[in-house]
Amino acid sequence: MKLITDPNLPDHDGFFAELLAAHRGLSDAESQALNARLILILANHVGDRETLTEALDLARGR
Amino acid sequence: MPYDYKPLPYSAPPGLSGPEPRHRVVVVGAGPVGLAMALDLARLGIASVVLEDKSSVMVGSRAIVWSERSLQLFARLGIVDQVMARAVPWSIGRISHGDDEIFSFDMAGTTTGRFPPFANLQQYHIEDILIARALAEPLIDLRFRNRLTGVDQDGTGVELSVKTPDGPYKLSADYLLACDGARSLTRALMDLDFEGEFYEERFLVADIEMEADFPAERWFWFDPSFHSGQSAMLMPQADNVYRIDLQLGRLANAGEEARPERVIPRIQAVVGPDFDLEWVSIYTFQSRRLAEFVHGRVIFLGDAAHLVPPFSARGANGGLRDVENLGWKLAAVLEGRADERLLDSYNRERVQAADENLRDSARAASFISPAPGVERLFRDQVLTLARETAFAREWVNAGRLAVPCIYATGAPDDPRLPDEARPGAAAPEARIGNGWLLDQIGPGPTLLAINCTAPDGLQIPTLSVRADPALRARYLGDAERALYLIRPDLVVAARWVTAEPRAVSAAIRAMWEGRE
Image 1 (tube, rainbow over the protein chains, first blue to last red):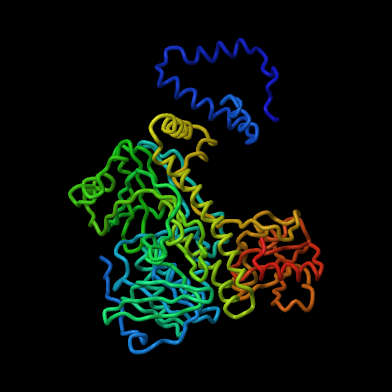
Image 2: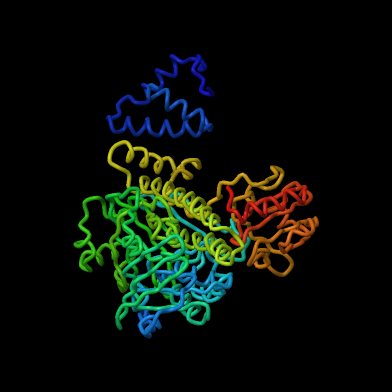
């Protein structure tokens, strides 16, 4: 398992608030587009195919 | 000037007046794949009869993009100068989203400079050149207006029924090579079906003739204002002819959309009013193949074996890769230098290549025509990000242009040597002296000894060269010397930094046995 599932992000509460703030005032379609862009940006930043597959599996509940 | 579709020569075949001697090879289909197949076999000393139903070359430009690897094959077949004299070489692609160019790419650095990465020439011109070359080749018996009507085989050969304007006749052959295209008669007569996917998306493909100063580049638009919500592509061909490809959507009516009064306004929106419409066709994406390409003594090549969407130079070029893979193997089997099992490796390697093409073309299809919903969402957001960020440009998929498949193999290798020339890969071209490396390899297998001497007594020609920087970069990397075993189809079979004679002779044996 290469995916980090233990706590890893400082100020997670702050990030969570920032994420929600980024969506404030957006329509559902705009929110979906923002989420899609964010996933693409973060996937490139992670830069590791195995980790991403593990992340997809975790997100799909496997 | 519009292309002149001249009738092709027909004369009554000998089989109408009495039984013909058994032939070694009958090729069905005189398109680029069938003609290249017959020429490649002739080059290796194998005679063939080529049967072709049609009476003139195919209407419309059809395949237009020829890859560097195909140009290398044309060089071996003796036609590349004629091809390059007419073709439009190109290396730059431009991608637009809406009316803004979001990025461009240049593939010029991927080749040695002998040939461009791609050269565009209408299929009818390629067929003209191949037909003239085949008619002048004594080992090729090219028979137009000869239609295959029956195929029957036992373990030792194939019996064919053929129909001509003067009546039917029979032919027998050791092998039948089915190069008869997407609607292969051979495939139908043998009750074989493709497996794979159809896509509902319809595309309009048109050739127009116009005086214009568009550069020799591939232009691709996602959602341009002149064709809103769809994709479009523009490419140059020879003689001031341009290829236009327009996505029409899933609900388009093919018969309706092909009518000039529908087509002309669409094209006017792209290039303006001054053009002549030469050819129009409507197509759908397909990613399908036969489960097996070798069926006893009947072997399938090109579109008769596999069909891919026409966006990334994988159709005709894929067929030509089939040709070069099969040619030397079939010649060796027919001349008793190899067991028939060598042909299984044609099936294994070209099925692997077809699956890569099918996978890549399915991915391009879903990017070019995403399903409504989340597919469309991600596609559109990749395009949005690509305007500002370099990484997303790589994700934009307007058809990944074909590169030769690297065949799976467990043959001897040395990790110190460069990855691009690993066993299973196409041998890279390099300048040596005043000439080119690949011209000096073949027609049989060759040992390429770089800064070393090949072991004695291996009964294979050796090409000994001193490495200059260009050859070093492609074949040595950080190693001081290397020995490469190169197959007749210019694929690396095995390689060593330190070669033991027994290991080399075992690798040569494995090559002739078609081992993985």
